[in-house]
Amino acid sequence: MGSVRSGVDVPGPFGGNIQWCQCHRKWSFRWLHPNGYGTLGYALPAAIGAKLGTPERPVVALVGDAGLLFTVQELATAVDEGLCLPILLWNNDGLGQIRDDMIAQGIAEIGVSPRNPDYIALARAFGCRTAAPGGPEELGPALEDALAHSGPTLIEMRDPGARP
Ligand SMILES: Cc1ncc(C[n+]2csc(CCOP(=O)(O)OP(=O)(O)O)c2C)c(N)n1
Ligand SMILES: [Mg+2]
Image 1 (cartoon, rainbow, N blue to C red):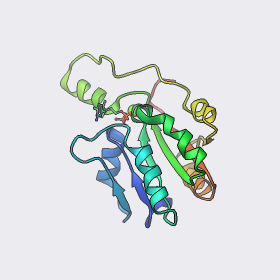
Image 2: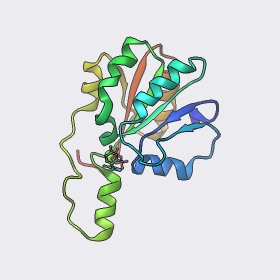
Image 3: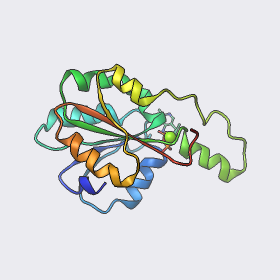
């Protein structure tokens, strides 16, 4: 996230990944978030709208693996419009926030570890560029690279503790 220090619009939906970012962000950037219902599926369409509305500003979308699936088809729009748009996907192969709550409450983890698609293959099927940084040290360069590209880039970061 060192690459998105300032002057960047960052739409995110809801989930553990977004709450972590909200708690830990140290930099000043415009943060777009669906306050109230905290609706999953918000980030990608909101990022597309932000980029179309202010093309001179860098925009980055932050999404979880479950959240992205609500509106993943909008990748086609981002590709068609040729939008410079890094989409940071935090893939922990699960509805992490709900799963963590279930574990904390000592109740059965039901329906929170879905059968996920191969997100890199899915993005490529929409004609979207992809990147898969091997670790945090590769994330900054991948983000810089995506911000220099004239189309969207799905950047998948995998939780090393998640299912293979
Ligand atoms: C439309 C919608 N359905 C359900 C929820 C409830 N909900 C909140 S967080 C969450 C899991 C999100 O998973 P993911 O996007 O993968 O983020 P993670 O918590 O794993 O980082 C769900 C289902 C919601 N916020 N919005
Ligand atoms: Mg998740």
